[in-house]
Length: 141
Image 1 (cartoon, rainbow, N blue to C red):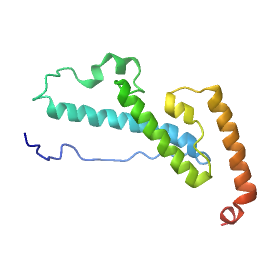
Image 2: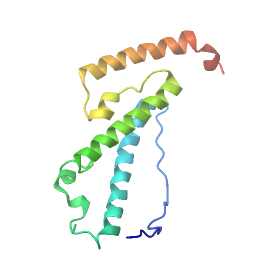
Image 3: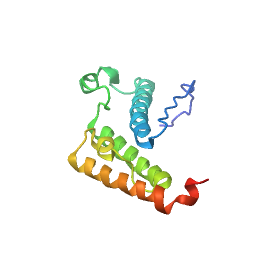
């Protein structure tokens, strides 16, 4: 069968989040917005193909999504989204701050861990050192 390329919707706005002093908190908030947008895109895709598929229940009625709307209603999709988002956060953070992103355990798993808190402590100390002793040219503008 041939697929027809048709524009179904247009973007009508943007969401901008910015925490003045914390790239990492901004990333956590953006991951929630990103997950919501991905869910809506999949829902629209499902509606577009509903004529040829036998799925009659809208994705938002899936019990897993109703019980926890901050997660995608399918385990593998949620896991892939979290890993992709956390890897991207680490890459941006390494460019900007010199260390992986803080709160990576939360972004990857949805909960804080003792190991994550220890990693955040070490990364914070590393950032402090970089900002105060080895990155002075960039800090002074």
